[in-house]
Image (cartoon, rainbow, N blue to C red):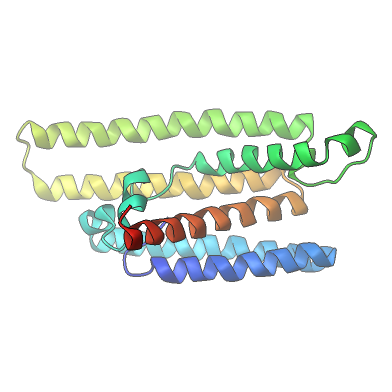
Length: 217
C-alpha cells in the first residue's frame, strides 16, 4: 500500500518486520513473539497515521500515487490494496499450510499455525469478510457518486477534494480495522504467519512491478 514519497521506506520497514517476526517465530520464545507482533502492529498504526497526513496535504496527488509503479496503480483500490486482501492472504496461507500438514492433522497432531484454524476462527473470518466486503462496496459507491457529480458538471472543486480526502481516509480506516479484527481472534503464531504473508505480498508486488518495467513486458 504505497505512500507518495515514502513507499520505499514502508517496504523496507516491511522487510525488517518480516525478518524480526520470522526470527521470533523460529525461536519459539512466546515473549519475543508477542513483542515482535506488538512492534509490527505499532508500525502499521504509524504507517496509516503518516498516510493520513499525506492525504490531508494533497488528496488528489495521493490518490494518483505518483511514486507507485504502473502495475501497482492498476491493482489499487482507493489509493491502496483492498482491505479484503488481508482475508484472501489468510485463506491462501491457511490452504497452503493445511495441505502440507493434512496427514498430521488427521492423526491428531496440531501445528497451531494458519493451517490449523479452529471452527470458531473460521466463523470469525467469515464475519470479518462479509463486513469488510460490504464496507468496501459502500466506499466504492461513494467514489462513484463523486465521479458522477464531476462528470455531470459539478465543479465545486474544493468540496470535491474534501470528499475525496474523506473517502480515502475511510478506505484506510477499513484497511487497518480489518487487519486488527483478524489479528484479534488469531493465535500469536498465526498472526506472524499472516503478517509475514502480507509483507511478502507487498514486497513481491513491487519486485514484480520493477522487473516488468525493466524488461518492458
